[in-house]
Length: 270
Image 1 (tube, helix red, strand yellow):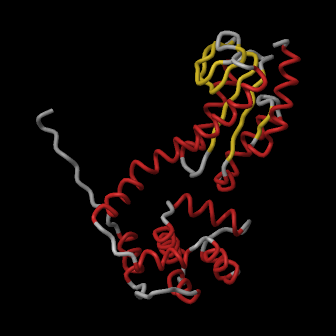
Image 2 (image 1 turned 30 degrees about the horizontal axis):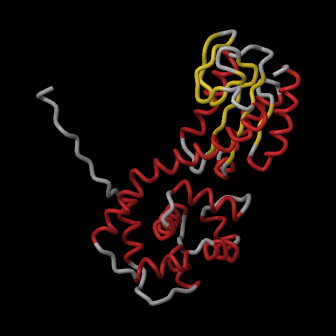
Image 3 (image 1 turned 180 degrees about the vertical axis):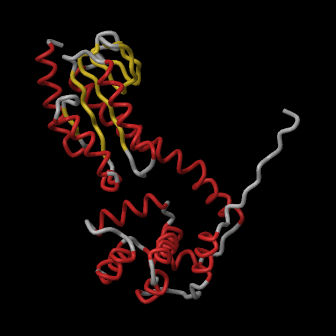
């Protein structure tokens, strides 16, 4: 232990240097217009446009994943890279304006920060990003739990390890209990892409492998980031199509979810 030493590393790589150089080239103005967005994002190739998107994210306070999700949602199919910008320039610029980039540039350039502003930003992009993810997931769980309570009262267990015919597995909700789980519900909400969106496949498969063959597995999920992870979503839909998942729901399907819980309640005699 005494021989161990810290491993230092710099965060400023060539990409960060390019991003900072682009940001430092932005002229100081009292107000910005569309031509300033063009100056900020114009790039000759894909690598340069990646720098452009990072600059946009810096002004908006978006992570790379969140920016990609927002652009994909607003632009629609066709990608968000340099070729999309060149082929559909006006639409791309319209989207950046709609996202509030002009106001964000004006605010960032004309605000004179105090030292607590710097520390607040460090907190937001450090601990804050993790807290956002936790709250997003918990909000969806609470949304689902409220519906479960309407249908089953207190006859369920939340965030538990249930005992199935082929072993044990974790789930968000087991009805009526973790010892006799006839209805299993998994609730996953996402606002950023990443490994956790692939982890859901493993979580669902663990439940499928452990549960009784006649137990129902309902998956409740939401978040625009699924548009960027279509392959993972297709894997879940395939499990629904072949009967391993009874049904997949989103928040917009609230009434359907509640109605089908009522049906399952009757079928299982709960």
